[in-house]
Structure formats: C-alpha cells, structure tokens
Image 1 (cartoon, rainbow, N blue to C red):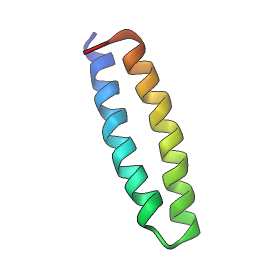
Image 2 (cartoon, rainbow, N blue to C red; image 1 turned 180 degrees about the vertical axis):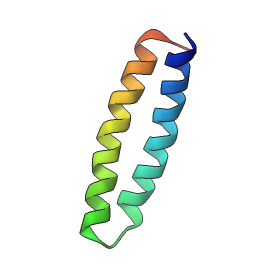
Image 3 (cartoon, rainbow, N blue to C red; image 1 turned 30 degrees about the horizontal axis):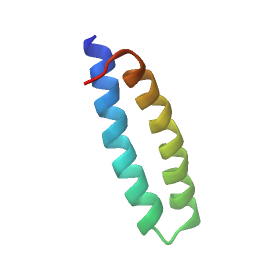
Length: 54
C-alpha cells in the first residue's frame, strides 16, 4: 500500500509543477515539457489512486 500512496502523492506534486511550467513559460519547448509532464502525472496518479484511496 505504501508504494501506491507515494505514487499518488508524487503524481499530485508533479502535476502542480508541470501545470505551473506549462502556464507561465514563454518558450514553446518548456510548454511542451510541461504538457508531457501533465500527461505523465495523470498516469502516475491513476496508478496510485487505483489501489489506494484516502
């Protein structure tokens, strides 16, 4: 259960960082990195919250 909790929390933190990066950046490369990070964080959060529910 602990690895699911950690992945859920890590996905949430990653989503916050990547959304901030995608919204604030002026450089198209950083915007794309932020968007890819958002997609990855959705996958990580789905993995974590599918087995662990607070």
